[in-house]
Image (tube, rainbow, N blue to C red; front, side):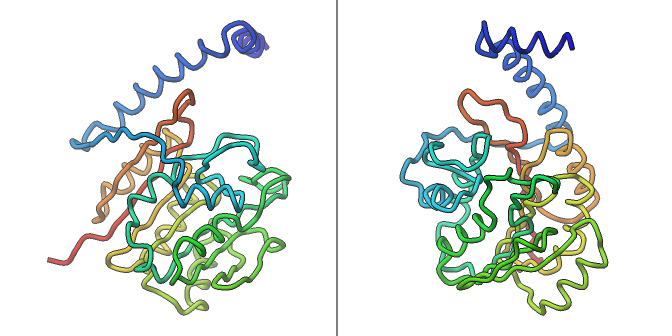
Length: 259
C-alpha cells in the first residue's frame, strides 16, 4: 500500500524519475553480475533509423518487435528494439529459406503472455514473410483458435512446456535446416529451455536461434544453462531512450563451426 502511494507521488510530481533512477542503478548492478565469467563484451551506440524496413513491417502488422512510430500500436507498452538488431544480422534477406517462430501472439487475455485484447495474432509471422522473400514461415502457439494459413505461412498448435509434444511436432512437420528460429512464447526460463532442448537440432549449421523478452534474472539462468553446452551464445541487452530495460533483452545462439 505504502509503495503504491509512493509510486503515484513519484509519477505525479517527478515524472517517475526516482523510480527510473533506482531501476537504472539496479540494472547496472545486475548486468555486472551477468558479465562475471564471460570476459568479453561490445557496446554499440546508434541513431534510430526511421526507414528501417523491419520496423516498418512491425508497424504494418502490429508486431511489438520494433516500430517507427508508436501511434498505431495495438498493445499497451513501448515496442522492443529487436528489429533494429535483427536488421544487422540479416544483410542478405534472400538467403533465408526457413523461419520458425514460437508464439503467434494471442489476444485472449486469459492466456499467459497474451498481446492484450487489442493484439494482432500472427503479426510477426507476416513481418518475416515480407522481409524474407524466399522463406517459408512456420509458427506455433498454445492457443489453437488463432492458428491460420496464408501465402508462405503455416501455423500449428504447440505447448512449449511439454517435451514430448515438441518432439512430435518436429517429427510430424518433417522439416529441418532452419535459418532463423525464435522463441517469443511463454517468456519463462523453464519453457525457454524446454523448447530449445527439443528444437536446436533443427537449426541449420549457419542458422541463428533467438530467445526473446528475457528478464535480467533469467539472463543469469541462461548463462548458467549454456555454460555447460557447446554453443556460441550472446546475451544482448537493448537500451531505449527514457525507458527502463525491463525485458528488452535476448539470447542469441549459434552452433559452433566444425573443425
